[in-house]
Image (cartoon, rainbow, N blue to C red; front, top):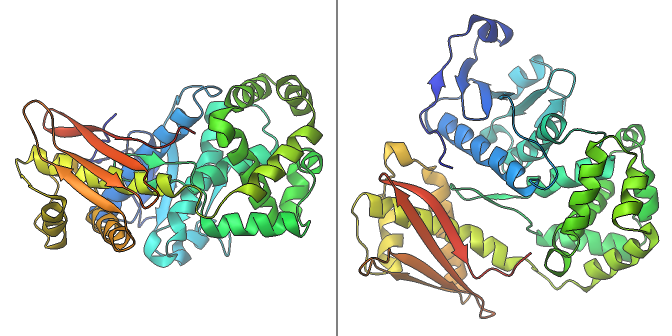
Length: 383
């Protein structure tokens, strides 16, 4: 599904009146955005929010409903405006369930954590509206962190990644017995969680969700889906868990063993997938503009020199493209190879990537009506 790049200004008096005077109101595909951003900053926000909602929906398809309304999202350039509007002191963003509102500070004021926070808090908003039921706090926060870690590519998100620093924290916490038992985590109430907002709790919840979603090529995904569907009907989570998984104690041993046995950088292929997806999307947009490249170096050179500019109706953030090509360059210095295969007959151009460990990824794009409609990266291990 393509993002609506042109964002239409709404003139609904009721919406404007509810916003601070400095905010304009824009309607995206899934969000009504109240913001003082403009230009490329606004376009990036709308694109990210569209792809984010689609990623929530795609990854929770087995147990969520449909998106029935557009979500309110307030995005402030200045922290003081965010705080004045009710934003929590010391936070970069939050979701208020009392009025279904997502609020955040724009990126230049909070650094690289902004979109992690928005992706995390945005899931709480999505879950309340689309999944329903009383989610156990570890599920709600674990899934929110799962999406928070997702990598934006311009044409979507790559989720399921395991940041090395977070892996090291989980390992150390397990070895030093700093985490709760799985049963204690499952019994933890929302009030207890909010009273003791420890990083270890977020790490544990995230690691449990990551395990259920991806261990052994998704072995537990059907049971997790059944568990979530049962919760959505209003059944108590402990009964839903027992019916779907059995003993919590048996789960705990498998969960610990999985995390302690993981090698360093276990999702290097997923991070590479995100980079290849952006590179391939760039190639697709260049192809739509009838630009031709004989090699990957020629494509990278065009990006570096500013010669590649996406069409207005197929826009992606230029800084994202530049950063992903820079990441590819660093990977090349470490032994990864990238190869561009030009268009040949009916076969469109594509990009091949070979990682140091021999993993091969192939990026392909589909054009419809002169725009990139889909980008697929093949070769990543099933998860």
